[in-house]
Image (cartoon, rainbow, N blue to C red; front, side, top):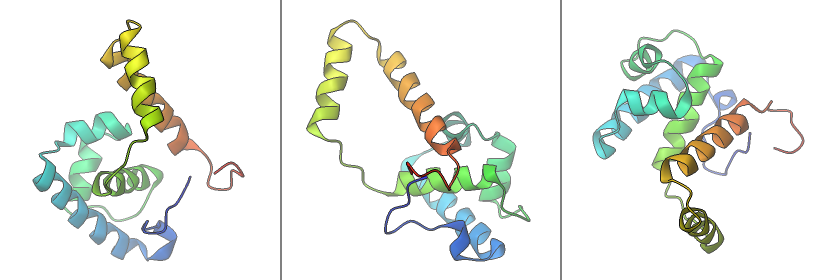
Length: 124
């Protein structure tokens, strides 16, 4: 998985500190962007119960699911700049008759594949 300069990585802090950070960032993300737990579930594939427990500080350890929630929360916090090429590709796709739902489904599937990549993957 690609890790940016400002990314919080699980290996950078003990589980207890990471879980506390995750609860705070989920609370902030939910309140600032009206992001529901169901939307986080759809984006990450992590069940809503785990998301709720993470947000309320009820988790005891960091698992792969918890890392996915953390990665998603970080992504939501960052301001993402979309290149002209990406905007043009989306426009061409939609103009050619593709549906927005299809484009979003493709992006979500590609994102899930990237999240499943092993951290030792040399392409990461």
